[in-house]
Length: 268
Image (cartoon, rainbow, N blue to C red; front, side, top):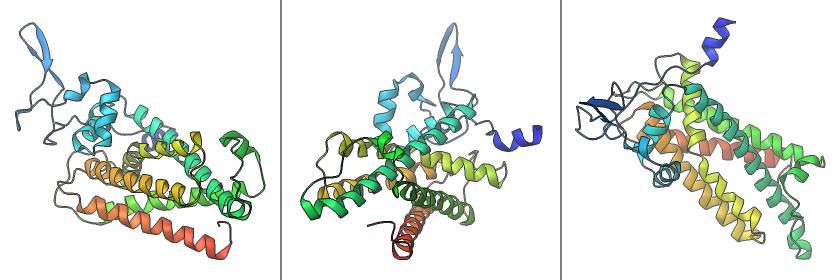
């Protein structure tokens, strides 16, 4: 039982300076009777100023592709309870799966009905959609395979391509399984952009080309966020390896979708 827990529990996270990525002993320091934010001995900046920010401000910086904020989230914010971050990351992957599947189902409904009679697909919500069994579960299965392919290819490319610099990132030094999990965790955290697809659910009418344009824009935004998060998770100084991994994962996911479309006709 203890061996199973050691495999599934995330390793402790070392604290990093969000600016230069150097390891820090703590986020605070005592100066006389005062407790102040620690200054990094390497870059002389505050180790992590985000610990005093509201979560909304942290989320805004995540949308601006700041590596500093990903160091804060992936390393410092949950350094004492890394299992909390991992649990929430897996939960959000489930949310992403439902959003992607619902978007696929809506696209399929529009292609089958909207062009024929000028009417949109029935907007009855995700819960009603999941309760139907006329092919919708097949779309869920296909989306699950695509997501699994994307995650596996991204982490595999990152781990197979050599890098000159690796920090104290949890993605390394704790075994191959922990490395994959840490990278998938970073991908999940940086996939918050998929929540923007809720716009097309709340304000119906984005059928046809407009809906597809929104999906492509959201996909590009999520891919860019994934590359920044993966780069931060593995401690690379440049984005080459992370960007290559995300591109390979996107191509592999597209190849899976095309293969399914041609062989089983599950998608429009």
